[in-house]
Length: 372
Image 1 (cartoon, rainbow, N blue to C red):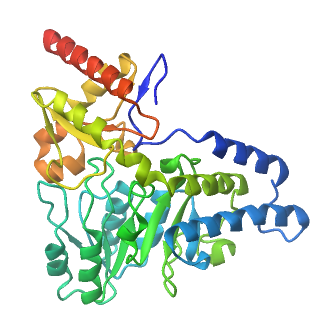
Image 2: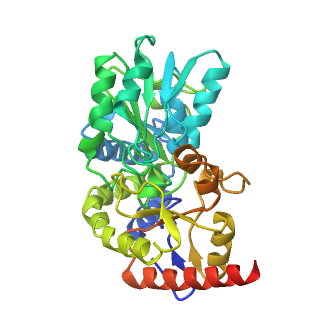
């Protein structure tokens, strides 16, 4: 996606909402603004849109609508999924909402086992089995479907087999993978986290989807919304937008597959000065994480921003901190992390966007070289 003023290559941070999403939200905000929990007509009109969104999402994942809980986004969904874990197995390359949840559980005395991270960034199922040996039955394994910084796709089907063999539950953060991978990749997960704004829907809404008979432990206390497991008034307009985005995302894997050629060209053109983080591993087709030798990632992001090219140096949830990417640090060390940048494309990215980005990269690198 680009304009005369900018080239947006930070789709993993957030995606531009579809016009159809905005139209649906506007229509519902005008006609069904009631509280969905109210039994009168205004509430019932709003409730229709809530339940339509629930059915749409359940159908997209091949799950029951009764096992869909709406949340404020992927962060809350991950927190909710892990809240009652008697023991947890995860790694330092997960999203901050999982890593911080794990640290919080450890502070409360829950056993947390941190998986080793190979340089490829792909968690090894054998290490999951080793971590689960002797762990309390019912332990939770949290592994994302695809990494938010590198795009590395995790071997979820094999990890699911290991979890079943050890009587463990598998939670999959599919926030970055939904709409890019086929749902079969995480079909054996016990719970799945999603966020609307990563699939061209609105911010502030997401979902936790479970299996029949599985239910999370509430993090919030309040009313009976979402069967008491996630209290709080739902936004029917946001959920109407979520529904449209979910429908659009179901054809996403085909759209995103075509971006692999653009990603490969981008990496090839910078191969003389940049190392690909996650190279050799199976990756999503639209993400490129590079360590540019001799340059700080955050400074390069700023230099490109001045030229109208929007990228990032790590997770948007960690932006504003002085620390380098913990994901790249866990994979390849602090030095590679300090020089890392992430370029993430979307279904509106075109070849001319990549050409403009490459031109800006070369200019930024020349300028930084001459000033150092």
